[in-house]
Image (cartoon, rainbow, N blue to C red; front, side):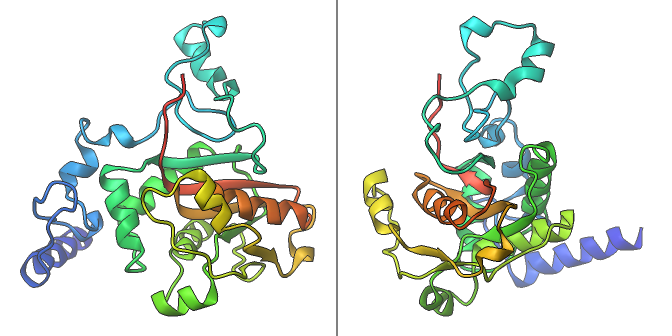
Length: 263
């Protein structure tokens, strides 16, 4: 009861001292728990379509439009076996599994963009990340969490690494060791801009990462964490560096993912 009262006071002060418009629909944000997105944009079914549901590609986690016709199953069995489906486009990628809370859009997009300017995960986003990891815990099982690193100059400019903010939250919630010193970005890569294609992004991160302490990941599974999975060029480069340094495998967790819908 006391906690609820304090929450109402806090949210009232938020409206008075720091009024925030929803970055999706421009309505007022009335709760600190919602971050920069209003409650409606977090919960309205017509808006939350960006959150992923099965079936997903077993490896890369992209949503599949439908299960292959040759595997027509009852609804119950389809749910049980949906993780066996694949998109057919990710077989050569160096990680084992990738999952995201949902598609890059709506509340997830606004929250991920805000995280690039301020190291704050609102409660809604923390819950979404925890739920995504919990629902895929067996698939994403790992021995250590490593955030995608920023180059030291970029981190000095920004003041923090948004991927590390996410990684710390997952580490705390699920008691998985966090390692922010083993994977390094050694090349100050070009900022990825909207409109850059996969080839441009891949070229920009070529040989940009190295593993400084390979003995700490040798024979283990790494959960690689980032804010947004766009073309996968950064995730691929990091995963490749970790596997070549001796990691048994790499799993990936992000807030959002820019997606195609595979048939």
